[in-house]
Length: 276
Ligand SMILES: Nc1ncnc2c1ncn2[C@@H]1O[C@H](COP(=O)(O)OP(=O)(O)O)[C@@H](O)[C@H]1O
Ligand SMILES: [Mg+2]
Image 1 (cartoon, rainbow, N blue to C red):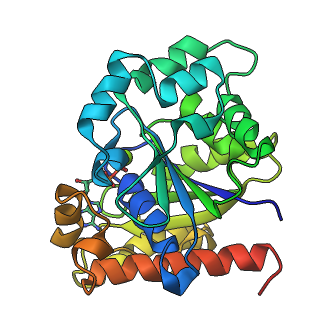
Image 2 (cartoon, rainbow, N blue to C red):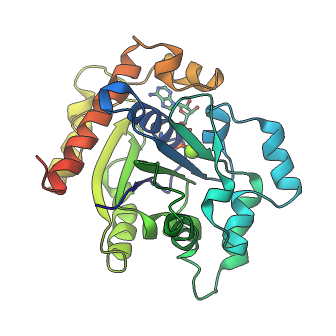
């Protein structure tokens, strides 16, 4: 199996926990309990919340924007992705930061013959040179859209996970995301949908069961991760402190939930790759 495995977090809605899941999944994978993986997080969102959440200096992001540099330039000029990689405060975790100029990428490359394959191309350029060999996983945090950048992420991914803020919408709302994934699968044969993870779950009465009912009704309960992420102030505070939750409050319930989620994800991947 060629390293690294690429996993995208996708949902066309915002505020559903994509970035929080990207940060905490990427970080969790670097921990001893999961084998001290080397992980690269690609912040493919113009809002660059993942970069800020991992304490990447705002000043450097502004510089990138002013100079039309960074990930945007990499995609525009088809430069090797490795030219945009930076270290983080967290051992084993590197980042390709996002910046505001990414919002222009869709219109800039729309209509080009390779518009959906830019990210694949720039990743392959570095892979060929062995510059990504150290990474076990690449996690891609996407924008709240199903546009050119998200298609680029799906085209190069082995796996995709869809986070959903439970309280907000039911199965019907994510059919559009599932449809997009299925559409990409016709071209990217490697792509596997790992499932939906409920985030920001408020546990009152049997609300979680209520949310699940919708999925059971349409026969989609297999899509759901067993692990759900509870709603917790600690998750927000970690972002404000620009750290993964585990680094902010190791023993918090939500930090533990992200460990459980990571473990479940790895089990799913191992099953699919026939390594039960
Ligand atoms: N488990 C959680 N509990 C409480 N707040 C959360 C949780 N996960 C995320 N949030 C907060 O919800 C907001 C949206 O989350 P985020 O991960 O940025 O979503 P997205 O990337 O899908 O837009 C952020 O302010 C984040 O801090
Ligand atoms: Mg986000």
